Image 1 (cartoon, helix red, strand yellow):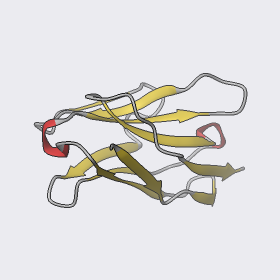
Image 2: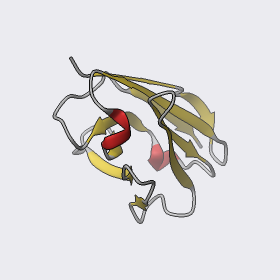
Image 3: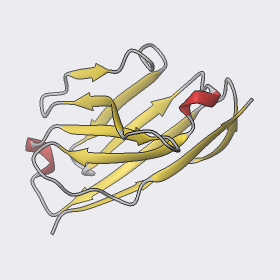
Length: 113
C-alpha cells in the first residue's frame, strides 16, 4: 500500500532554514507528481509546492522565492528546502502523491519570532 513518511521538521528561529524529506513507497514514484502541503492550527490544509514527474515545479505565492521542492527518483524521495522561514510558516507539513489519496502523518515545523 502507499506509504508516505515525512521527516525533517523541528523548531527554528525566524530567518532560519529546514529541509523536509518525504520517503514514498507502494506506487510508481517516478511517474507521479508530488506535492507538499501544510496545515496551520485552525486553518485548512493548503498546497505550498508541487513537482511533476518531469521535474516542473510550482509554488504558492506565500513561499515563492523561499521554498524549493525537488525529487530523487532513485531514492523515491521528495524534498522541501525552506529558507528565510517566518512565524507564519508554522504548520504540520505533509507530502502527497497526486496519483493517490493517501496522506502521511506529517512533520511539525515551528518558527519562533
